[in-house]
Image (cartoon, rainbow, N blue to C red):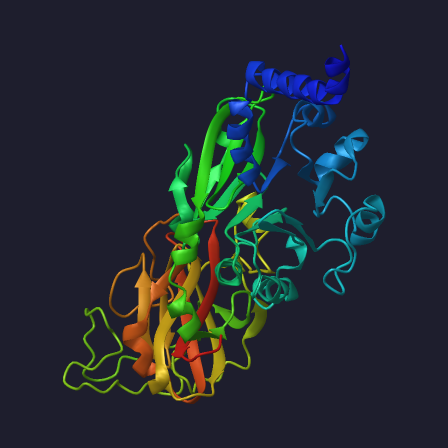
Length: 473
């Protein structure tokens, strides 16, 4: 007994070690838990309510694994009980900017000076989320676009998403969003994505009207309502349309490597110079006997290029009284901001900046001068963006460069176009006509014809840009 007492401490220590060993041996090692650690690579989960029906608060409680959501201000006004720090609002025309500022105390203010809380950004994991003011997008020079570009310059975020209440409907803005580094744009129930980054296409997926952008129509998903859940990791961003039970009914995936490998060298090497912007001011005149088009000697009346002499390579000079001539005096014409026209289509009516008078002639004429400061020989591209209905012809410094939906040859104010649906900002490559530009003042002239003198629609807007080689954008 003396010996047992003597080694009591040692025996107690051995018993304790034995108990610990048995406990570890009999305890099931949580291998599933070690697998779940892979989910920690998920950078963030973020929810978006589009044109949602139903109880938003109930959805938020259902999706407890999502910490933050986005929704339009209009939707949140319909569900004030759901407003909380978890919800990030998208500014729209349902409230003034002042009222919007007061409604959301948790939203950053003056992220972009002069825009209040209507423009701001937040960081979620490896993504940057931009909430923009669609009402302020008048052209590609809006401060929001430059702010995005500066914010994303040198950013370590893999993905960049943006929210807008309305489609700006300006190709220049969409190009600026693309070059600023935005990968996806949410406009109500439509998601616009850069097609180069898409590794998994959803249903209802199709090209958009804008270069390099495709779109996913959430409103066309048969099972409704749904919430769009964004989930990102180091290699991919997945957008899932989920029902109230959390079941995935459709999804789209953007691959980080595809986006990173997208060759931006061309965009960086070329500097785009707008010569004529979308929604510019134009001189205009309805078709009548005062509009003269000359027929110079040697011009092929039925050829595709009516202002090109058949026996010489040099263009035929037009007399100063020809409305297409750079020397034509259009000071008596009226002035209006594009888009110009008239239409019985209620949606298109909202786009018109200048409503033209409906006249007996099927034709309207438009002219605009612009300056080119550099040497035309240093330019690499010339691009036309045109919206029209029904047909048109464009002349650059008196020479035809583009026409559509109308017969070839010399036209008069009574010439009819082919009946044609409204064409939304078609981009046309005019590189072959770079030699028609001159250093200094240039003139662009456009005639737009209806398909019938009584046709209810005529629509026109045009943008013209060049690109030059250079290291800076």
